Length: 303
Image 1 (cartoon, rainbow, N blue to C red):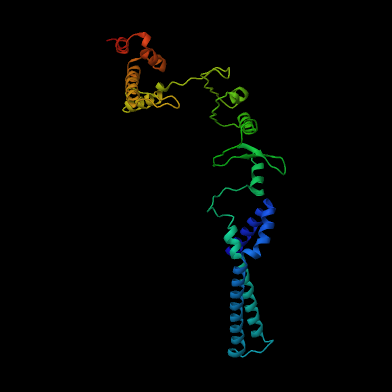
Image 2 (spheres, rainbow, N blue to C red):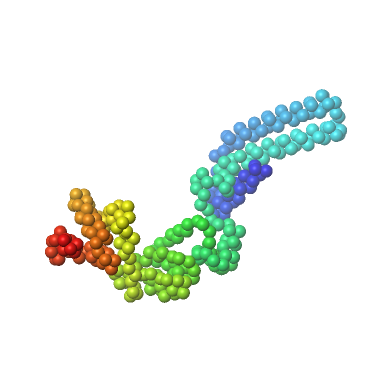
């Protein structure tokens, strides 16, 4: 049964490839006698030898050893066994190259990606929830995916990724969404509509959406009494000090800047009231126009 399944899968793969590229199918048929003539003759000779040997053996068994005559039950059983063997061997020899070249539908030696079948597409048309991924080509019904796999949409610029996939999902999907939107188009179109699903936070420091921007204070999560406060502050300083794109600065000055900022951040978290534990306070402390940094820091600390 497993062999039959492999043959069916390989034959289906061959027919799909022929349907996608009819020219390849025609060329393959024309080249087959020339390309595989030697192999065909060798296998045909081997098949004839094996069939003749087995046929002679069965005939010897039924006539000489068992003493049957032509037309007896034993003689018919021998003929049936011989015919079944010859047909099975022929199918095996013919299907082996088919399975070798076109493989199993479940094989993933060269990757497991494939187009969805009709049953898989039909299941997506009946889903009432999930992410909108397109329309069925045969029925025009919407396709929604609500499974555990990740989704990736790839298409050229201006080909409709936003209006065809992103915007419809932002307008209809009732779930939490984090949307990276450099141009602000998604926030402008779907920002107000998503408020019916819950709170909407638009981080827009450059005012490209004309919406009120939300804010994030990384120091809110820093507890001065926590054992890992120094590590948390160091991680934040690493994020604040970086080279401009395409440039590589001196590592010494970067590390010294991180050390200075780490110290100032520790001062802000440990000594400032809650409303002043912000990066704005850090900038005030490190602003050259506000006097020397050490003096300003000591002044704020009350020393």
